[in-house]
Amino acid sequence: MNSQQARATSGYFPDSGDPRYRVRRYELKLDYRPEGNRLVGSARIEAVAAPGPDRLGEFVLDLAGLRVGRVRVDGRAAQHTHRGGRLRIRPAVPPAPGAEFTVEVRWSGKPQPVRSPWGGIGWEETEDGALVAAQPVGAPSWFPCNDRPSDKAAYLISLTVPSGYTVVLGGRLLARAAHASTTTWVYEQPAPTPSYLVGLSIGSYRAVRLDESPAAVPQLGYVPARLAARFESDFGRQPEMMRLFQELFGPYPFGEYTVVVVDEELDVPVEAQGLATFGVNHLDGARGWERLVAHELAHQWFGNSVTVADWQHIWLNEGFAKYAEWLWSERSGGPAAHTLAEAAHRQLSSLPQDLVLADPGRRLMFDDRVYQRGGLTVHALRRVLGDDTFFRLLRDWTDTHRHSTVTTADFTAAATRWAGRPLDDFFTAWLTEPALPPLPGGD
Ligand SMILES: [Zn+2]
Image (tube, rainbow, N blue to C red; front, top):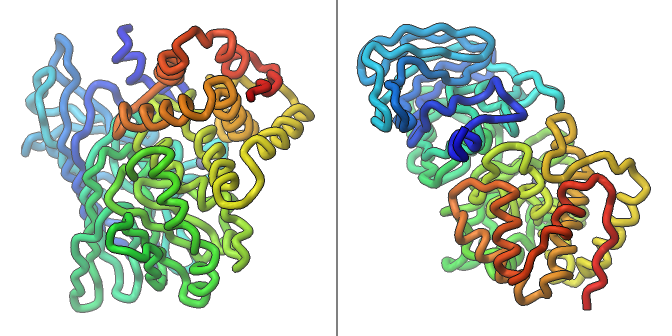
């Protein structure tokens, strides 16, 4: 297996995605009726067959629990079967290796969350609408996709709902057209986006502008009207945070950043492309959850623009997002990153040390210890490299791999280049040994 193929297979989720092709662009036309939870969809998917000796006689799209209607490949009806969340398609004329082809799929039904070790993920009905938080394998709950993080594509999504609902998606709102009793919302996300990062919210929201100058990254909030004042207070420093992160991590990777507060309690906020979803429990009017505002914003660089090639590298998302919380604290008048790191280190020292950060396994991939030790690893590296080299490395990392996918090996190689000396012992201790190393002394 060459390295390209190794990147293509999804070790933690062998039943998700298909490395035999990649998608360039999804065009989704959806109609959703919250009453009855009824979704009707059609997709036009522009894809490219993988290089290699063979034509693409068969390929798979992930789609869970919905009824598939017509399937066409390059305009011709295609044979297909749909079992266990896998839509197997056999084109009448198999695309040649490396050739572009187009898939059209129609589907309908009552979307439900996909079962996972972390409970239901993906499409979820709310009191008054719906939301999608798909990480890591929930995207097939609402549209057919090549559901692996390394397959990033552009999206054009048109969603029709009864008038009165607001539709929030990541990306630019191109159009909002009212019909007799429905309204169609059209959003475009041109940046390469893995299916798990397509987030969605349908509900009753008031729009709140956060950015205060035309030069700033456009930042919009959607929030239940009764919570607008609280939101403006809790997210009031986000534009400042956006400026700081651009200074530390490089230019913001997308055209805009949208935050939606859904009218429900959520265990944790969730990042999507150009979008973050918070629960009402994350608003307290006293900026009590500001570290999570920083965490979700940092994911736009770490996770969303620079995406893990496979889930085993999840620390590259969560470790950096955690560290961004500490950097924001340090730079906004709170405790220094080192103080927060020492506290995290003390806490981790008292917990079982049975987790390998570079490959925690599917069961532990969202364990809080991955976040904490990930943040500690980044901080330890900063102590070893010194601030100047460390922050150059961060900007080089987000620039070199902008809108691309990465592995842990890519990161350790980059850090070693910037260090100008081998860091094997350092990375072995922090990434592949379960025992927690001491924090480096630093200066
Ligand atoms: Zn996170």
